[in-house]
Length: 338
Figure 1 (cartoon, rainbow, N blue to C red):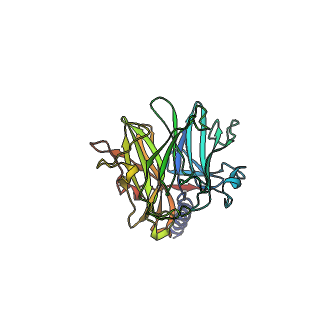
Figure 2 (figure 1 turned 90 degrees about the vertical axis):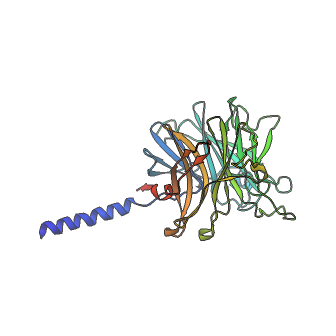
Figure 3 (figure 1 turned 135 degrees about the horizontal axis):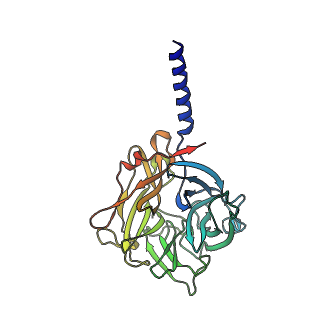
């Protein structure tokens, strides 16, 4: 009996320990990078929240990139509340460039900045984020695009381009200069994706043209433009999902499987929500150790629609289009290390 009681107690303790370790990582708008043998995920949150992992599954909360807030934030977005949105991390010439956005929710008062570090490892003596300030902003009455959701891609000439934007007049692409912290001159702009904006929609309203979160991924001679359609952040009413088009040139046109230009409303479905994960999106995409993955957040029905990190295997069909199995949503379960 004593042995049984001891075994039972051990099982209870093991179960409690497992429960303590079983919390998933809840993030919005995740992007990932690798530095040494560690992976790092950065996400929307106070000061930009970030996590580290050695296996892309078990994640440790490392803290935040900004202890306070960018010095320019309030001047661009007066209603900025400390939550920095939708970062992107880009490695170039031995440095990590972290692009980020500040905005008033649903407003054209928004801006994109960039901060630079030699390493992503907070324990390194070289670890220090040095903010380069404001890179781009949207001004009501002047611009009908939103300066949020930046993503950097290098073209075949080794030059950097930043895609960004949401709702309003769609997703934009602009060329950066050699520093990767300023726009190239003369400026080169392109609309790469948009959805129909109903006539007479007031400029101050985002309207129902639901598109955001561009991410351009190079693969097999194509640039693939991923974007999120639908509504995020609406719990059970979320309709967020991921679409894609592709182009041989970085500035498009990006065509979907039917040959429709994404700038004219085109976009082929990659993955959408289901009964377990009602909405998902704001993806990024990477090749790590020869394996392609799609990284995104998804709202879990069983957990009151809390957003969870997903790192999904991505393959390619015979025509060269990305494929992500719906079963991947339940297969991948992150674990937050306490």
